Structure formats: structure tokens, C-alpha cells
Length: 114
Image 1: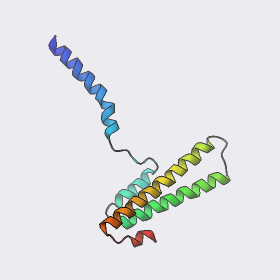
Image 2: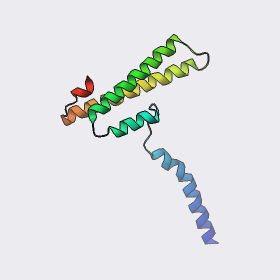
Image 3: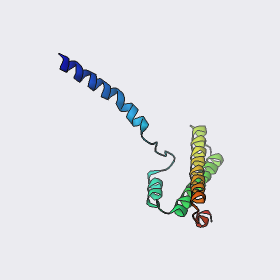
Image 4: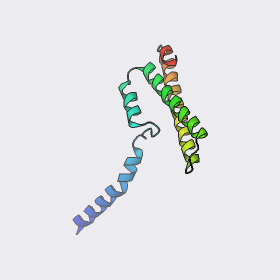
């Protein structure tokens, strides 16, 4: 009888802890497409290239935002604008983080900024 109770408790604990373990995983940057995320991953060692990529992604989000302002959709227009603006801010923040990291490491990041 004790074995069944222990197995039941262990199973209950594992099932209860599974969502918590998923929550502890690092969050994926949901404002990047899978292609964009692959490009960032491929340029892992080159800080200049990663800065350039994040800034180009930010520019793309800004162009899409401007397009949405000029051509408003009839449904979920506000949600679309909010999503694009958040993605733009995320890309700029990541580029700024890389710039700050490059400055701290005293890397030559001038190429990434031009």
C-alpha cells in the first residue's frame, strides 16, 4: 500500500512541477521570425554583424508600422500597431545591449553602427 501511495505522490509532484520547469526556461524572443533568429544565431561570434542585423530588423518593423498607419486594417489594427512597436523596441534594445557589451569589452563596433 505504501508503494502505491509513494508512486501516486511522486507522479503528482512531477505533473505539478512540469509547468514550473517550462517557465524557468529562458524566454524566446517572440518578436523575431525564425529566419531572423537563425541569422542572429549564425552571426553569434560577430558583434558588428549582430548589431547590423538587429538594426535592420528594427528598420523593417518601423516600415511595417508606417505602412499599417497609412493602410489601416478593419480588424485588430491597434493590436497590430502595438505588436510592431513592441518588436521595434525589442530590436533596438537588443542592438543597444550589444553596443554596450562591445564598449565594455573594448571591441571595435564601428562597422556595426554604419
